[in-house]
Amino acid sequence: MKKLVLFWICIVGLSMTGCRAGQQEIERNNAAESTVGQQPEEPVTEEAVTEEPVPEEATEAELQSREQIMEESVGYTNLQQIALDSTWEYADHSKINTGAAVLYLASEESGRKGIVIGVNAGHGTAGGAKVKTLCHPDGSAKVTGGSTAAGATEAAAVSGGMTFQDGTPEREVTLRMAQILRDKLLSSGYDVLMLRDSEDVQLDNVARTVICNNVADCHIALHWDSGDGKNYDKGCFYISVPEALKTMEPVASHWQQHDTLGTDLVEGLREQGTMIYGKGNMSIDLTQTSYSTIPSVDMELGNAYSDHSDVVLEQLATGLLAGINTYFEQ
Ligand SMILES: [Zn+2]
Image (tube, rainbow, N blue to C red; front, side):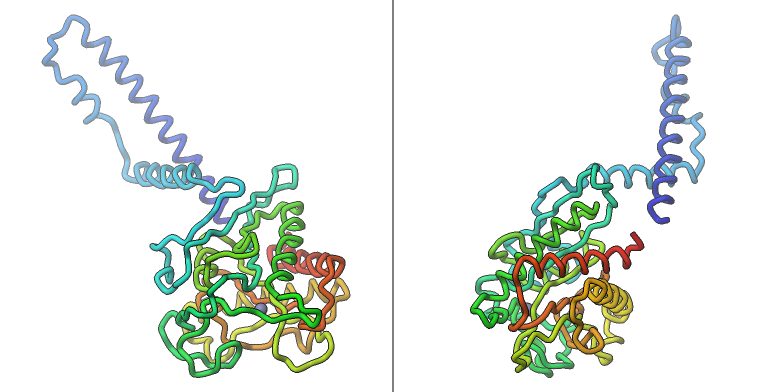
């Protein structure tokens, strides 16, 4: 709807610009004709300008249309690298931000939807565990445990991640998962913002979240759970926002979107026959959701005992795509 309105404003603005340009052209021609044989001092140009009727509303619409056109002209290109813009809200909370995300644009043949999915392959930032960032934008303390204990105000900028039972590091599996999901999304017409597009990206969790906030329509981080003490695959769930954080901004304004997206993703996975852990969510105080101003979910796709072969990752990607389709009503 918003797009339709903007489009309308753009069209109206353009036609007004066109009309006014045409009118000026006529006036210039008239002025040129009338200047024949006249003294050069004749204030023809001034007259033409002062006589031009410029209604207040038309000027406003024209300005809006110009803004819109400018936005479109600086539109993103396929495979564009997107770095953290220091003017973005919360960007100053990031400590590791020399890397860049990569934006993949869906082809027109795929039926491009104009929806950007932020796909965040968890972990994979060398040195990230040695640097600390604020858990919450307002500097308040963490309300639950996790990689960092409750009560701490700072957490690892990017933690190291877990290791699968077969010795594979989580960061390798999250990247493979992100690549498989990316390809599925692209062929379904979604644009994909890959927060980590290779083995390592020098973007901490705050930077990844802030880039998503400003470029994507949702943010999905991919993880496998660690430290649960279980010796079997426990299944998938998403991380929901703890009750105590629901009055803190920007969580207060967005936690319901996070829950809706998380629930849709879990249901998409369930439909694919994927095992779901418990009721499908667990509330943990995460940096990601504490800084998110768009629908944002940390998906835990299993644990150290989960099968992480391509066949399984394909199935997970199909489930996630189904959930994304449900969320965006596609
Ligand atoms: Zn993880």
